[in-house]
Image 1: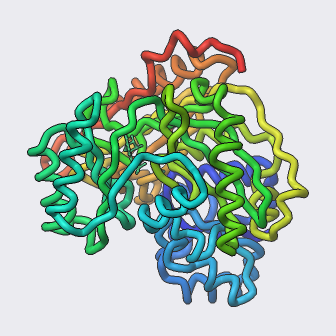
Image 2: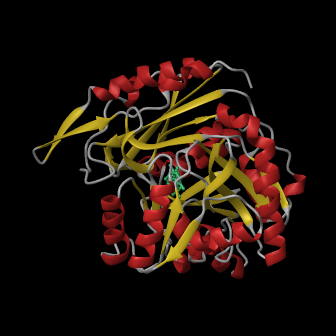
Length: 436
Ligand code: AMP
Ligand code: GLY
């Protein structure tokens, strides 16, 4: 079977390596891929938004199935294009990807179908936004309010303000400087609690919930620094387990009902970011693709065939799929270029991979090849994962191994580039031995 994977990050690498691990006969090509997928699989030099050439490539090369990783091509209709050309592909069509493309669209849908979410205002008026944000700030027990760009912003369009000055700065950035574009903004109540990520395969009214996971968004150890795309992840998210039935009843089922009533053909994965507290479960956002770095850990829990799940989802035969998961504990720590999520250098040679213990697995993200060398080529560079019987064991192994990278420093253009090491919930150790 010939598969084309659209994307180049750790999530796409994880999908490919899981498929290959489960069936070594599958032939996998990436567009555009990264420096590691080039040697381990095959890359073609086509951008993720180059729909015409991607579809032509799939036709001319007898690709049996295409899997789309990132949101941009989904939101702009790659699935519509492929299906119109008679090509098989995994992911929601443009109409269904609106849940990711517009936070306001998702909010209205949630209101209509009684899915609990933070109260909000959608606006493009600075005055209106300021008035509402100030009132939410003063109502908030923790003195916080959230301002979000409505459209796609590569995970960076969310600002949490904790003062009137903070609100003014955020509004300047979002509405006056239009840092992310021309769309409206959402001003939203800050919800306190603990977060969890839920991934649900959805197809033609059927659904399958994938194992729980959590990612860590802050860049530095101890949950400090700026928000990023995600600096580490683990599965299961033990704190969320008692809520899984409620999540199914209060989120998944009403979501499916809403799709049916609105006539939306959703075939793909829904990734919901949730906040849970004593008031219940609230949706922070919907994404219409797999999370990164959540996917890296979720797929380690999957024992049934990933490829089969994706194909059956796209063919609206999800009722024929039986999900099998293991109860291993998975920890993933992201190694990022110094400076990320702001400015960082690229082109630093990655050394030390050959010294890593076989107990950990590496998922490659922002890397490029230079002959036999592997160089950094992005913010998030490597994911180091360990699968073990207990979280303690998995943490220890991952952190022991990433010390090896800590020793790496290299000079590019006179600048010292260092790795950042990130924190993955060490403070939760007390909970980690619970059995699930
Ligand atoms: P989003 O892209 O909407 O998931 O937001 C990114 C991150 O911002 C989330 O993972 C949360 O950590 C935080 N966040 C977003 N909305 C809220 C909210 N209403 N209350 C508290 N934190 C939030
Ligand atoms: N890890 C969060 C995301 O993929 O959006």
